[in-house]
Length: 125
Image (tube, rainbow, N blue to C red):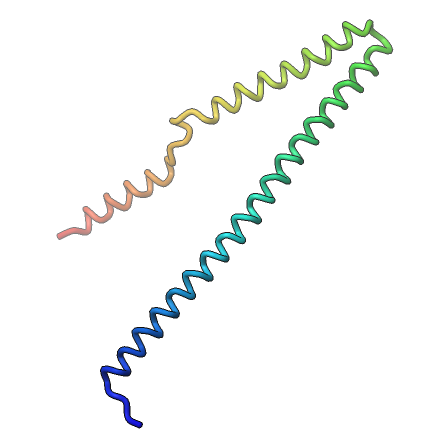
């Protein structure tokens, strides 16, 4: 049985369309799976951060209790609180400085791009 060129082209178009739909369905399923994995990972990260925070607070309480052996309890709490406060302020100021827009400019990339433009201009006839 001989098939016409039109029939072959029609079959090819139909098979291509089916293949494309199947590939899109596979990509959607894969993406949904990846999003589910990322969501589960995010939940685990949040749980880890919360537990680390709780552990940090327990360690701070232990430091207050240990320091209370040589100082009054209120003074021990004030010392530990002041040290944590100072560290927190330093980290906030340091982070704010690092986040300034002028520090985020990709200077090396801009410099090399500028050098490339200059080189291209010199090579132009």
